[in-house]
Image 1 (cartoon, rainbow, N blue to C red):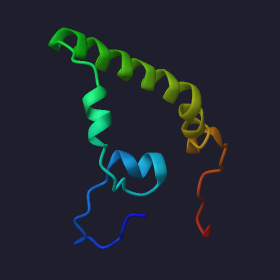
Image 2: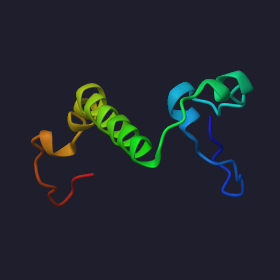
Image 3: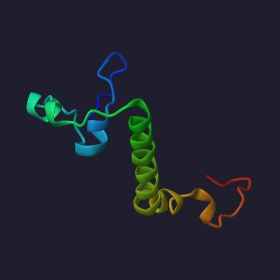
Image 4: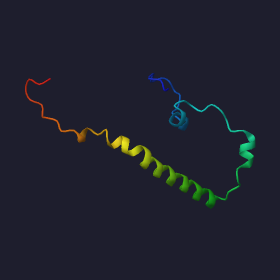
Length: 84
């Protein structure tokens, strides 16, 4: 949960979106050692694939919830004198 205090300097991280709170644990050294050694080009391709996968899932799973909440989907009458 983020604070509404403007002087609270806690950054918003990816963990807030994944678990609704900051991720406080660090990866274990064993996990870091087992990561494959990738060249620059291979790493770039992997990052591009991850980005594409994220965008596709976001469009399928989240985008429709944002679009249905639009104020332009409702027909409303214009304001008239004396209307609150």
